[in-house]
Image (cartoon, rainbow, N blue to C red; front, side, top):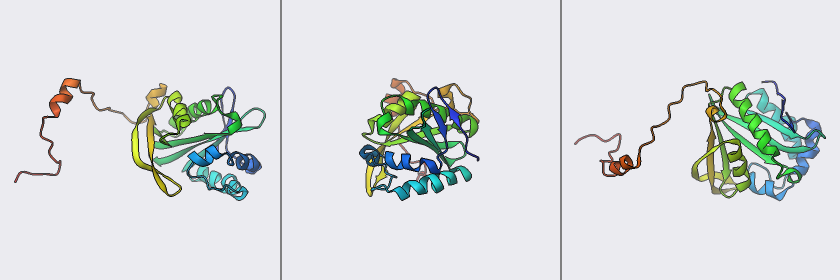
Length: 212
């Protein structure tokens, strides 16, 4: 896919390019980004930024595997970065980070909302996931403001520089944003409390077991 440009009330969302190298390199020196974004090399060198803006990010657009947007203010300042990674037909994952000087202003929530809508409409996704290491409350706050439902904790769900750590997982569906799905969705029925209590006494048979 050719890179696309999205606009929000306060931001321009576009693919990064070589002249963004210095901005990406500077943002990546932030200790908070180094702590929570486990995919970032540490230390983060200028050559890492060059490879990202000149190779990794454009390649993701070219092979439809990873769609990366830089979030820019009208002044041209980099406010953050977002990406949607494809996991299969109709299934993707969103990730994001904010530059230190632009945190707390709602920019990433604004950008993530726009990117999510784009993923549902342009990429025909039916489920968009969000993952973050447990304790990354800023990332979780953005996800919840966008409309994600936090579904639980994945034990050892993330590799943080050689250490397995627990991660939160959440999901956003097109219907959460008032959009249609490309495939029908039939949610599991919600059982009343009395039915759940009765089920505790039922035989819990293994699905592959057979009578002797």
